[in-house]
Length: 90
Image (cartoon, rainbow, N blue to C red; front, top):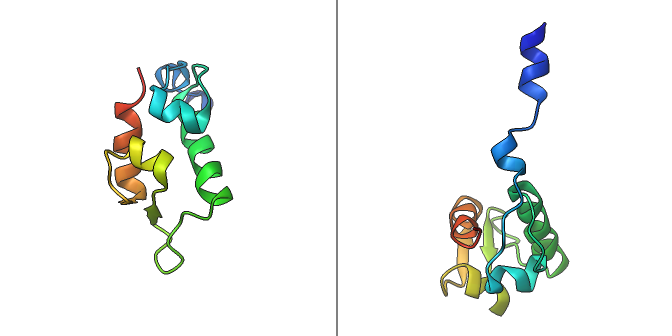
């Protein structure tokens, strides 16, 4: 029974607030945020600006702000996105 309780406990490292880079701050704000919240805010931005490829929902079409975060790429996959976000969090 104690195993299931431990499994639900959030990972402390994941919940540690991280400072977004200036490029990422343009999307999520300048305040330090835990990684899951950063990802959540980026998804809100993507959905609000309709930046998901309608033919392939796993593909994100970057606008100017996201291109700055995605290393200048104008298209990235969901999986690639997390790799790029990690480089903008300290």
